Image (cartoon, rainbow, N blue to C red):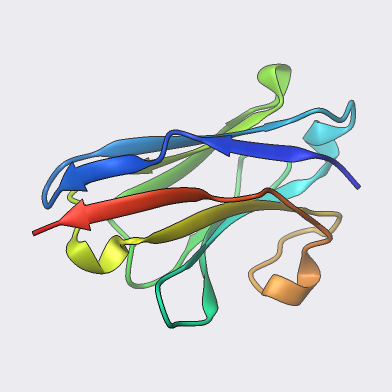
Length: 123
């Protein structure tokens, strides 16, 4: 398992952008599939995006496709989530997670989780 720390959350207005970062302390970061999930108030945690260890394959939830972009810098042990055209319904705690799989879109597939960072989008 790896330790993950998210940053970059905050309060923004609808239509604004934010970039979340998640940094790993492990030395094997480049071998992990990385994902972003979110939990909105009163809702279950849901998948947002995932990126394979080499950055070649990405998957997105339909609700964020075309607005969010996941990327990674293995030299910096960091995965990013660029969020554009934010909507009030994007308000949630955002979590990054790591999995030792080829690709992973399900919560149960991830073995390491960060503590989360709050994103609040006002209308």
